[in-house]
Amino acid sequence: MLAHPDAVYLAHSPIDRADAPFATYRELAYRTLAALEVPLPDAGTILLKPNATVLYPPEKRVITHPGFVGGLLDALRDRGVSAERMVVADGQSGENPTAGHTWELCGYRTMTEARGVRLAEMNTDEDSRVVEVADGAVYERYPLYREVTDCAFFL
Image (cartoon, rainbow, N blue to C red; front, side):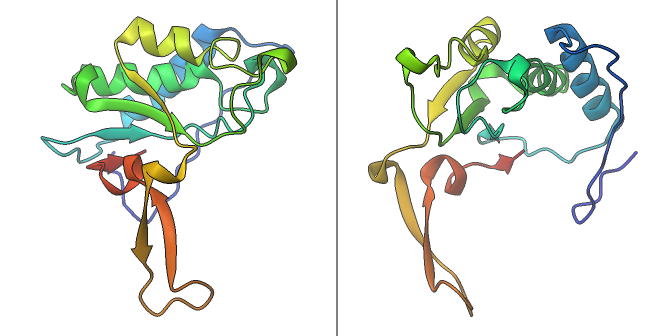
């Protein structure tokens, strides 16, 4: 199915237990993205921003499960996008090992390393640029991270 840029697509997959394994989330994401014809650019970075704002363990279901993001990366790879072009990035509360909030504990570090994909934090002002908002009702300009402003495709 050809993806429409103004549409939101939902996929439902029943999970009949409290903790679904990594493979279940991976398969759901892979199958969903594989079913859509998404026009991808031939060059430039493909950015995946997973909403990992507080680095909790994935079974807490506070963050997007790393298995789901892994399935998206696998589907992109199978469409010919190299690992060097893909990056998983988010601005989050930061690593706090004493509270158990780390990229490692939430499963993102292992998932991205296994695929050779860069994992980036978007937490500092040095990593952002100011973007003008034409006819902005609330803001006339807004800081956005370079990973966002410089990517060829944002997922």
